[in-house]
Length: 299
Image 1 (cartoon, one colour):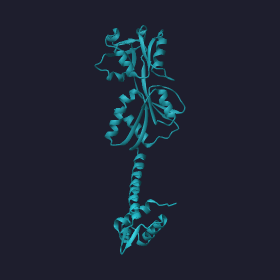
Image 2 (image 1 turned 180 degrees about the horizontal axis):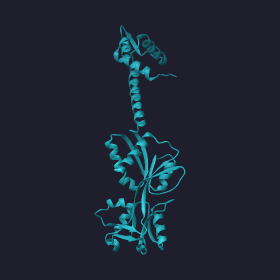
Image 3 (image 1 turned 180 degrees about the vertical axis):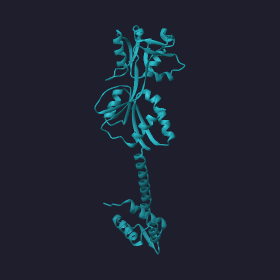
Image 4 (image 1 turned 30 degrees about the horizontal axis):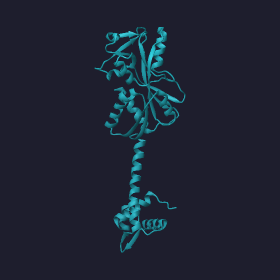
């Protein structure tokens, strides 16, 4: 087995490019005899002649020419490797995998990506969208570094931090009888057709609504359940029923035929929560990404 290191390759390349052992030794800050021995041992380990000796010059043999080309490539790879590892350790370069709700993709990630560009970071963000249960399974399966979801839950193996808390708004079509109201109570909706988010394994928007309806003394008529808020809002825009959405979605539907109305008695809120695995050490890139998330939301 031929074993060689970066120092040997660098010495060989320097000898080739200076064409002289004495010059190469001075350039490498060493004396000529050890350099000569190093080249000889390199040739012995490869069992080839790398140089043809011509008076005071060393001229590459054909095997030497191939070795020089490969050695240059390897040295460049060493340099790139050191650069990449250093930047990765500093959190300025690398990959981070995120699982998130549509809201996070729409309202948080564009700000994060803009900040990454502004800070000239070489970070690649890989995103998966899906239901909370899917994102949590991917986190536990080591497929994701971070999750951003609306579901609230308690779990010993995961850490949850609240990013945003906002009102949960009633949404109706612009020509709905309630569209002229500034606020409503849940009891005002007892006869309406509900479009709700699908059930989660724990404490999501649907669970908040159903619990509040039960407290108000009625069971809502649910005509549609879905994972995503945007399709429901588009159905509501067509007058298919009423629904509920976090206030941040009002920005998207400004000027469209959906009215967002404040919900009173009870006032309900929705949260976007950051989730990580408790036992997993964060990479420097993930730590930098989380800091950027915190920074853009603090503005």
